[in-house]
Image (cartoon, rainbow, N blue to C red):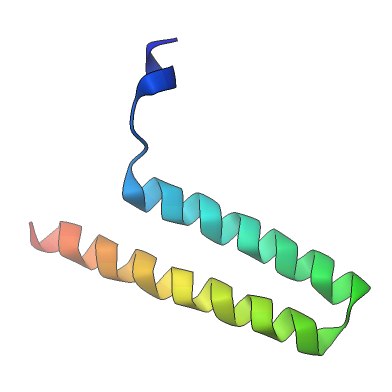
Length: 61
């Protein structure tokens, strides 16, 4: 119950967004084809780069 109002870690939030984006890419691939799915995969790749950047920052600190 106390975790209800706890702020989510930005890294964890990005990881959750990345997972949802990959799920959406799979759904788009099934329904709309490869071209549309490629755009969603590109979005997921950008999120993954941001995750890598944050993890590198944390390792330095």
